[in-house]
Length: 125
Image (cartoon, rainbow, N blue to C red; front, side):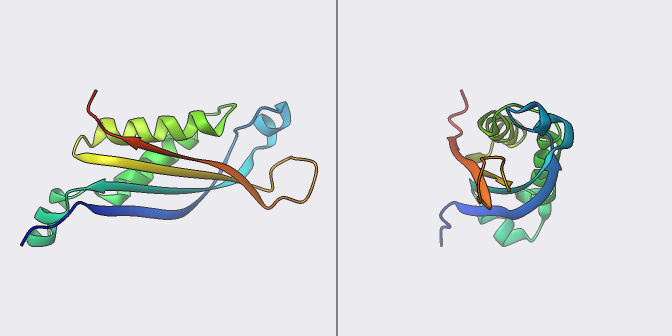
């Protein structure tokens, strides 16, 4: 029996951070929701039941927290840093997807969320 690559994910990580183009966003911050998903080989972990044989989602969570803590003007920049760091720390990952939503963004009207979604293929280059 052969396993296809599996998905490991974390949903709805809620953090307060200081990203944005407007100066006020960098001072008071805003709440964000982050989703992270990676595609990787899960066959060994499925057979051994050992965390050492997989990508630990607690480690992925720590990457998200650290990168969200670095203020940036654009969410694209933050998402790109998260995706690159995940691939750097876990070369066995084939793909990574990052979604970041700003809660109640300052757009001048009623808007519950705005954000970005990126998908990176880890071509090891």
